[in-house]
Length: 292
Ligand SMILES: [Zn+2]
Image 1 (cartoon, helix red, strand yellow):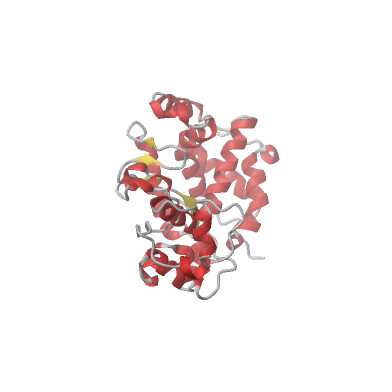
Image 2 (tube, rainbow, N blue to C red):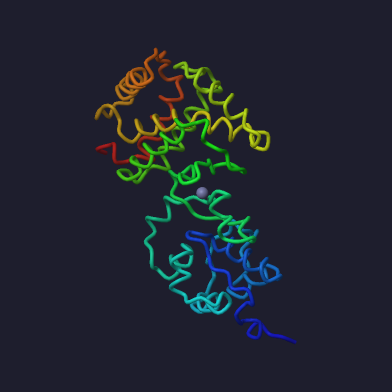
């Protein structure tokens, strides 16, 4: 009966990993190309991660020989694998933990993966938290399907501003999450500033695309509100006042939003998600703002 050691030899089809690919994605692609179960390959490296899938990216319970075993299977030297696979680089302590927190499970657009061969349809990568689209192919990738952005040039422009913001701020993910939450709460509870025209107009342009029927309503709304989410994230990271008092900060932020969108902001005070979220999250997620 073959032992695990006997199975550990180079696979006949030795695909390379895609830059920033998850371990689960790479192992699944190797498995498909070589007609083997992905779980079998994963078990050659260490214990099978729970709910192992292309999204898996853990090296928990790997031993010091695991990277060498992956190199044998893939027929590629460990440094080359570590350059492309962030989880392997972290395991080998080649990258600091700081980079890890700012990356999210994501995927390249279909045009980018098409260049990686027929098994590339399931490529999952880690992307910087602020990246929402493929700039080269102008496709929105924060959905189950790529959404063409040609009819939405303001989304591409908002991503450019976000790229600049990300170069100056490390807490971009927290600011975006918070901004999106505020926008969703506004939509659900009544808008203090009327952005309805922009959103309806963008939703019309999205819904005119054939792919939109395959995209969830949540994903369509996220895309439609993205430029305003970026404006809000910008104000969260670069507040319009240095005041620490939540009420002062709230009033300065609403005045700035009113100025930027050139329309009236109805200040709702403590009922406003902007006020509640800023107060709740400011000290916890943006400790740099407070003097303690
Ligand atoms: Zn692309």
